[in-house]
Image 1: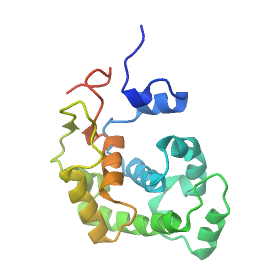
Image 2 (image 1 turned 30 degrees about the vertical axis):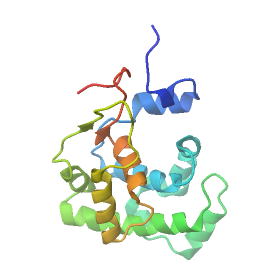
Image 3 (image 1 turned 90 degrees about the horizontal axis):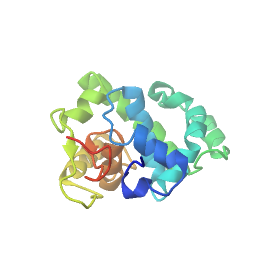
Length: 184
């Protein structure tokens, strides 16, 4: 029997279907995974998520397995090396942002005990479920988190990016009601 998926995961490449089926909308509490998705979402700005998924393993290698402690220490020579890496998105602003965001991420971990504690506090640990049939691109929740992250010094964390991030890490479950993964 054929599984019904969200429209964006139908009639598309296998990597996109696997992402939908295995990751998107599933709650994430692991800080390394939370940082990975934040870094990837920030690089996705202005591009397709499919492009990022196809380059994900290259990003993993280039950015030390998404280790925020290591990334926070990157110097100019590493930034220049990343600018030469054809396997990733070679955008100097986004690369510098990843370094800056790693530093802020570590400060948030220190303040809250974990980034997971910080990010999940915005919903009191609850998952937000799609109520209508239209998927939003921003919400008051993504606005609030975006503003807070910017205030702390992060960049490439606008409300649209943060909303995509919240979907990716399962704080927001936007599977459509006809999708086999929609459930409360």
